[in-house]
Length: 295
Image 1: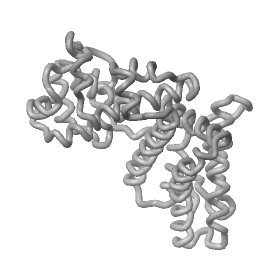
Image 2: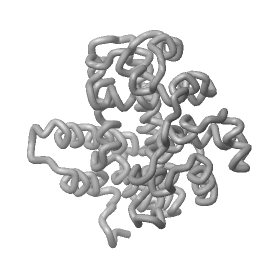
Image 3: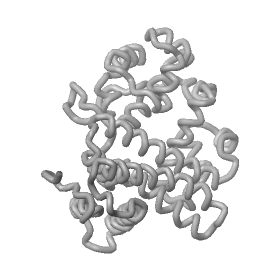
Image 4: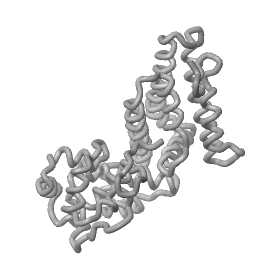
């Protein structure tokens, strides 16, 4: 369900966001600037900056070069296990001189994770600053108000979701398979999936209480619903389910995803991830079948 590749060291899947976070820590700990670090490993500084923000996947040779230059093991960068970076005495001070875009990305990632796991109203600016090794002033510079942090966290996880979805869709030309992948990417199965759903649910709650939060929520949700609607219409153009109301099918599916995920995470029923997937496979019936062997 996560966008990942299988690494040759452990045969376990690499979590792209987690790998990027460990690479950032390794680069921060190095006794040179980010640009000099890029020069040292023979990598374009812009490409390195994108990789550190999590918007560009590192190649095998680049990851190996970073490990060598940062004096950490490739296994650590891939899995978090093994020899990690040793932060020098001046490491914290140098961290505050990071590239502004990288600093913002680091704060955003920490903010999203803290809100997801501790709750929007339980996270203080001091918690975010501590997680990033920076000052509260720096956090306020990037996110002047706490509501800004929640919206940024929602944007962050929405972008990660669509990135994973694009990578999954690139593996197939089949509309039916893309609809199946759409289900798999939505399941609250991994820690990161659960973090994403936690942010969604908290954002819904804030939108109920604060109308000012609703436009941003609607924008992000509409983007997700449009993906569903486009796939339904693509299947109809292939001659399947043409008689159905595509908008109604999209609404049925998205509503089921939301409701089932709430049941799984809140544990208010016996709903499980496997059962959620099984129910969603039938969400478009009788117009579009997603079961294996379906035409």
